[in-house]
Image 1: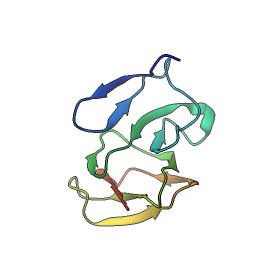
Image 2: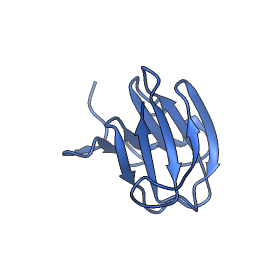
Image 3: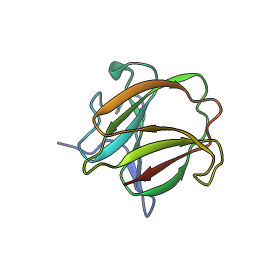
Image 4: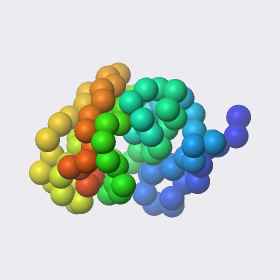
Length: 108
């Protein structure tokens, strides 16, 4: 199976273009989709813990936490993974208005 997107070295972020986008968030990843459904395709995938800046997320997007071992994805207003409003536990997915968020943080 070919990898989708390009891994940004050292960041743990995998970005996919719409044509390459998968509809399933892989195990051990947290994913943000282009739209509000699984068939809208994955926009970004996160696997490495810590803060990750996000850009250009306006309106509603599906967030899918398919991480293992209790890791959560936090939606944060500051770009450094602070001032976080929501945590999504593993094996959960939910649609959020992503407009106010400037980063996500992956934490155990």
